[in-house]
Length: 68
Image 1: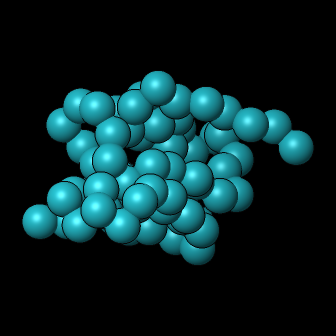
Image 2: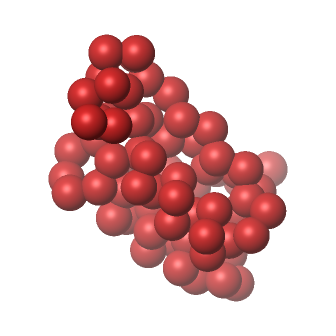
């Protein structure tokens, strides 16, 4: 098993856009630095990588802030 780390959502998207890279699951924080939060990353991943599992982690307060 290989793990690919990304510092922020935009970097994760760079990896996910490369179809030749096999990705089985995405684990992301809900709240992240930069312009994209975990919800947006999960939405993109699910729409563009059919069948990809996405797990979001974060505290309920941070999740509520990001969803607002």
